[in-house]
Image (cartoon, rainbow, N blue to C red; front, side, top):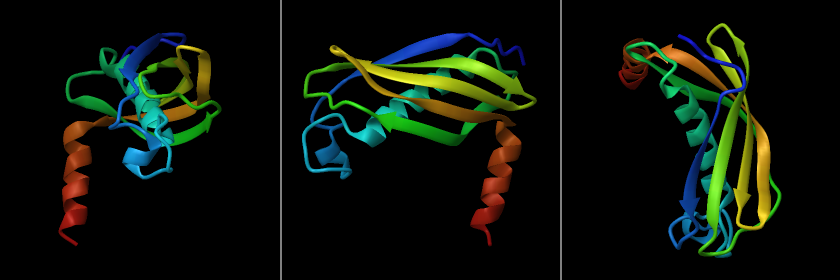
Length: 130
């Protein structure tokens, strides 16, 4: 595991009928939905860690604190950036931002935990058997 503070990545999407607040049920307008912005932000955090983890490892989100500060219309290009700010054992912290064609639409912080995929899924399967 070689995780570097300051490393960042940006992922993108376009606002369309499938990712609006109206479509995902988080509101009644055809603007970029808050859950979709959060998912894009979390995707950027997941992606920035991908090539730093060992074989059989992945990361899972454990905490999000996000503000959605501006609406984005249909057709807008959306980008979300995650920057690694701290590493504490298996816990990795990030600053998150989201932007559209006009500027900042969201910001926040996020924590992820590095886990062994197989062990994690075995624990999940045990819960299903209860």
